[in-house]
Length: 404
Image (cartoon, rainbow, N blue to C red; front, side):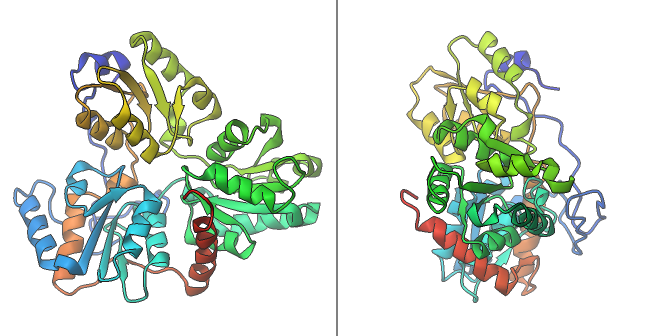
């Protein structure tokens, strides 16, 4: 366990946690995982002293045929080989802007690779180095559950006055559902704009219309309350595991924001106690968190914003200033190294990586690239054509929103 006091004692502000065990490609399967994927292949050993050189050689052999995308939460060893880094939507757009690339190697998680497949041409093929790199938040909203929830809203008589809005961190099937029902996709950067647009379709923020927000309840709640001026009482949580979502018909009629019972396993860890502890340990510290954090954590913080926002805030911060950041650890460590003139701390009292994102490691990337060099197509992500069409409708609606 890494405590706040331990972190502060380190000059860099960080200590490496013990590595968590990862399922090695082709060497077993984890039936308890959210996907339960078994991949077949020969994975290079992480201890292979030639691994970096093999990665360089494979990348050079692929040349312009391949475009490698690295999400901000990826390991440094993977980011070193990324042609571009960014959040999930930025990376999908970057992929679409490279029509000359035959292969898009997406070092992220499954829903991100799906978005890249939707936005790129039919001639391009999207590869996810480890098919078991899922997203626990995205997996909290299964398409069957969402369709059943919509049926509940129809039975209660509020579906016609409800617009679905789904976070980028959702499956292609959920994005397609949103497109079929005249909704939109949002990012953590433009959630306010997306919600205002959605409410405008059903009478405006001050009206009586509703938004069904998928799948992260915290981003939906924080945006509605802190940006749109709604109250916590305007928000209800729909639990797909309970009859009627665990809500009465009247609660559904009265609600303005119907929030899906989903959350990020990393950002959901941060607590008000973490904020209290870091303020006591570092006088004058600026606390900055991602809007996927709980409402009480967000309201106790000084700055709230997307991954890109967090990076830009640190870039613009005064030398010597102190910051405690509540988001995924790989990113926090990276921005801390990029700003040695600032005191950067991790907000949580224990270290937590995004475990599914961390399934993409250098051995998996080397295996995927070497396979492509040898002419073997591996781990291709292909979205069903009908889902791809309707998901693109929802994504295009987001692209049409102002300010993106």
